[in-house]
Amino acid sequence: MDRRTLLSLLPAPLMATGPLTEPLRAGAAQLIGAALTDQQGWARLEYLCDRIGARLAGSKTLEQAIEWCAAEMRRDGFSGVETPQVMVPHWVRGEESAELLAPVAAPLRMLGLGGSIATPPEGITAEVVAVESFDELDALPASRVRGRIVLFNAPWRGYGPTVAYRSNGASRAARLGAVAALVRSVTPHSLATPHTGAMRYDAAQPKIPAAALAVEDAGRIARLSKAGVPVRLRLRMQAQTLPDSPSANVIANLPGREKPEEIVVLGGHIDSWDVGTGAHDDGTGCIACWQAVVLMKKLNLIPRRTVRVVLWTNEENGLRGAEAYRQWAGETVKNHVAAIEMDGGAERPLGFGLSALTAGQPVQERAVAQAQQIGALLAGIGAHQVTSGGGGADIGPLMREGVPGLGLRTTGEKYFHWHHTHADTLDHVDPEHFRLCIATAAVMAWGLAEMEPRLGS
Ligand SMILES: [Zn+2]
Image (tube, rainbow, N blue to C red):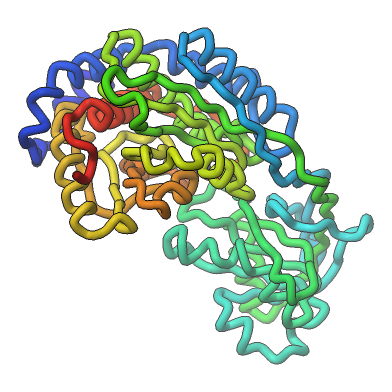
């Protein structure tokens, strides 16, 4: 679909225009125009995905990505490009496999969960007990669980409720004497693609290996179990946690022309899982935010306040970058006017969710009303919705200090098709949607940095 067709299909916008909207209109139109014809952002995303690839904390490729981003930002002419060190967890997947042994022999599509321990070298061979929930597990007699592999075949109920099985399943199963835990991949849609992600051990329970199965394989095992057919499988994992490893956040500034000490920060996380190439999660977020500021520079739209790009490290399995940025900012955290995070993939953008609740209800209401007036400038591309409630993991430490946080929202139709899988590659990023995300990030960040009042005041 070409751009004109796309725009003509968008619904008539409900705009919350106001006194802030008009003075920003010309600059916003320039930014949108530049973003929709931008080539450099896509070229950088392609480089990051194809020439660097997966970027798990502790990996050489993550450090290569950080160096490349910082070097490119210097070439862009950003000032104060810094890569302050952050120590990150270093988990390594190693070889891994799972196979059904009975009632038939068949390979299973699996991915070990980040943070898991290994199995013994010969693997763990055991009968499987399949449950759909923690309640169902806890209702079983201990004799049904001890020495078995527990499969949590929890149906998708949205990310938050379903991911609890991935995060806590191993320790919940270990408490009852299980020898390993498997979880159905956390996704509403599957083409036999297993989804990895972080898990954590409860220090009070024995540690057992944990892996995700593709939805189809989990379903097959659960159906067999339900039919009373004993299911045996073998799980082999070589995963290990090495000592913490040095990594870094990437920070670059476009200094403000009137109030350089006041900062609007925007960015995504530069790390990814070790499968796929971290395209949607979160290559698109990093590069769309970065390119948004490149366009301000190219158009000589230098706002009143400083706009800062931050690429946080280790969002996926530690959030160490987010905490380190907060520490690095020190006292200047009070000068952070707003923090924008993009970490939901680059589908067609709808706008932003905004939360400033730790700063108090009046600030929240004023901030949403002001951001809606900036959002109105994105009506032409359908990205004008600013709703109350939002933020992101990497800006969490800033938001807890009262900094208003905005999370870019998209249609989110396919995000969990690729999330944490081998399929999170450039092939699944729509260049048109990616450019719309650059435009959306650019207009909001520039508007917040340029508008006369400070957000929320
Ligand atoms: Zn992410």
